[in-house]
Length: 127
Image (cartoon, rainbow, N blue to C red; front, side, top):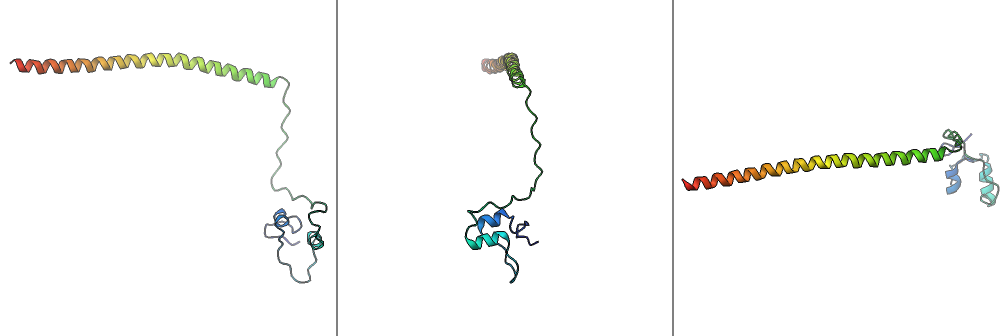
């Protein structure tokens, strides 16, 4: 059985059928069904060619959804969203408070250092 450049039989290659091309045949070779239809000019109007062979395994049919499963799933999603929001608010508040405490401590250290340097500079001038 002759095959086209794409690896399929000549009359089963969708690429060759779409483009209207076919591989070169030796003189005297019998015509395929598609070539005979193309010669009569009714290749697109006649019955469609057979389907191409399967190249990939077909996925299994999904199992049916149980009644009420969607409602339970949505309830879980809503519960997780609410719990996540509360955790963010709780831990966000705690972390914000901690950052403010650190901020005030650093500000106090900086102000103390500035005051120390000012006092030291004034003390040197009096001597």
